[in-house]
Length: 184
Image (tube, rainbow, N blue to C red; front, top):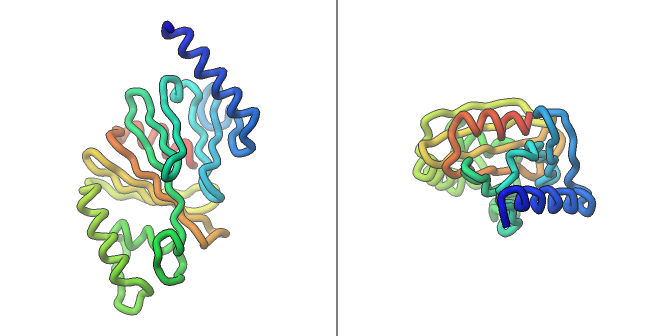
């Protein structure tokens, strides 16, 4: 199958997915040209250019995984108190701890667990830059490392979950121009 045929098959697959998946829709709001809207969970809506998805692989094992052609990959996970196996507390504060922006106080519920996750984040991502941004419904927190990066998303009205987007081998420019732009 040549390149043109592969692109046609990919576009047909996307159209098919759009027709059967109530969580996906196509629009032209964030990027020039057609976009694919992917509702990853109750608080996370990604709007990616269809052209970016050409040659990409999407799977839904252990969260949503997108392997972009020549642009790295992302893994989207929904985090809840139950999935983290921690005591109840407002999850919208968790990214502040995980990014090292806010210190974990001794009286914070699950303080030891959070301190362990902060340490893991530093080892995994080896942060070079940390930033925050606003989304239509909440806040985003970005930690950029040399090879791996992470985005945490919160929602002002839904405090029962947060989204973690683990990013592999994607340039800072692509993170900003593709992912952040698709979230804001």
